[in-house]
Length: 171
Image (cartoon, rainbow, N blue to C red; front, top):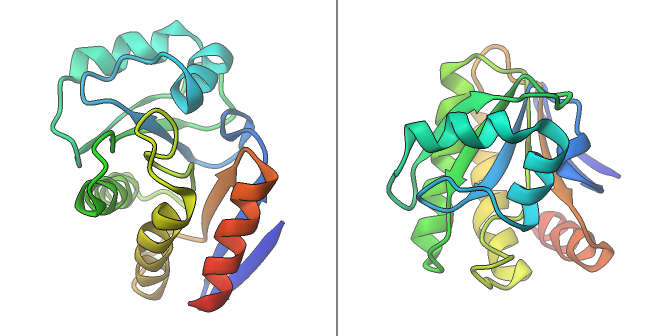
């Protein structure tokens, strides 16, 4: 685990399973139809239950770069924010990250866990993803809403954690 404080907000990096995080919300790396197949979505659905997918699909389809929120089923989180970042353009990842923060702000959440968006099925290199998502997280931490206390990035693989750590240390 690594933590960088920005005012009252902790920007943390952990290696692990995003579906097991005990934050107010976890972000699902979603497709624009909000079907939950493999990767992050599959992990969230397996642990949290099919009801998350059912609720999400009722809200879709959405455009790439948008995000919607559902309940979290059996997860330890309260909400799942479904961020459609399946495009590989940097603007898609940036838009989906910002949309996820907008959902967290709307709900006045204190903590939110993000995966490395678009690095699975969409195939975006982890380094590229980190260079897009981390500056947005730091910007959000510098201008938080009242409740925000933690922005967590949960990386499944050790090399992905190391990549995010290297990029965060550069910023």
